[in-house]
Structure formats: structure tokens, C-alpha cells
Image (tube, rainbow, N blue to C red; front, side, top):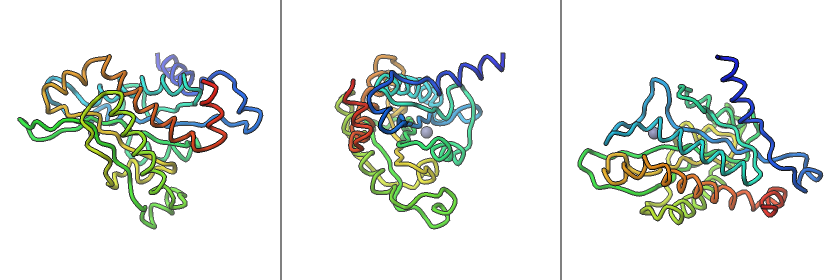
Length: 232
Ligand SMILES: [Zn+2]
């Protein structure tokens, strides 16, 4: 079955959206890299009957569908329950010439904590060794902050979740990305009510729709991409 699974993966990642007027001009459809946090032996957070790696994959797949429907190309770091090192996830941005990178995660706090809501992380100025390793030009900090702000606003509007704001932290998966990159903590698995929502497909859809709206708004700042999205 391995080859069938592989084929399915290729179709999903290489599927081209409807041809639009931007093609003639740029010959390039923007690529968004979508990362479902954790996977395989790394389950991530486990609380209130939920396992982070499954929830992130469910949300990431819906995010992929939303972005493809908007006319963008999407590459996923994983679309099955497999493990990938953080550096390899980040490196895919360079390999695919991504214009944006979104890593999907679920938050935790101490047991019995009532913490809830959504927060979005971006990496600040990368270190020199990261710049050398990734070939970044060092502008990602500023653009990633813009992407984080837009995604955070849209995802909170769509889900009506508590807005915990954007935060700067040098998580490897976003710091080493060669494109603007954010990590969205979509809610707290340690909060029983929020855990119930996170496991609900309708709520996952709202999260995906909100993140996608933010990514689209961010990319609209680029004229070639604005043409793609204006079509929809
Ligand atoms: Zn996580």
C-alpha cells in the first residue's frame, strides 16, 4: 500500500487550483506550507481525552482545503500520523519556495488550570548561524510578526475564542523557516470545555477558516497574490 499512500500524498500537495489571471503574469501560484504539529511517536499534549498530534492533523487538513479553495498551493509537512524533526519541517519552506508557513499546535497549562483561548507565535531576529543555515535574508522577523497579527485576529474572530495575543519566541520550527512563519496554539487541551470544542469537527473547521483568512489577508499585500485571491 505504500505506493498508493505516496501517490495520494503527491496528488494532495501538487494539486493545482483553478487557473486564474495571475498565471500569465507570474507563472507562479503561491505556496503555503502547513505543518501539523507533532506526529508518530511524538503525541504532543495529552489531556481530557485528546491527543495533540491527531487534533493538529485534523485542523491542518482542513486548513489545506481552505487554502486550496482560495486558489493557493499547499504543501503539508505531514498528512499522516508520522514524525518529522522540526528542522526538516522548517527546511521544506526553502525547498518549495513557500510564501508563508503555519505550524498548528494545541496548548497546555497545569492540570486544573482554567487557561483558554488562542495565541500565535512568531520568531524574532534569527541568529547568524540560522541565517547561514537557512539562507534567510533576516527580514522574516518583521514579516512574520505581521502574519502572526493577521492570523491571530482572524482566527479569534472566526472562533470567538479568547484572544491571548501574539508572542515572540524562537521555536526552531518557525525560526528556521525560510518564509514568514507562525505557530498557532489553537486552544488549551487542559481546559475541559476547550478540549471538548477542539475535538469537535465544526470547531476545527472554524479554526482552519480563521487561519486561512489570516494567511490570505497577509498574502494580499503582494500584488501578484492579490490577483489570485480577488478572483474568489
Ligand atoms: Zn505542540
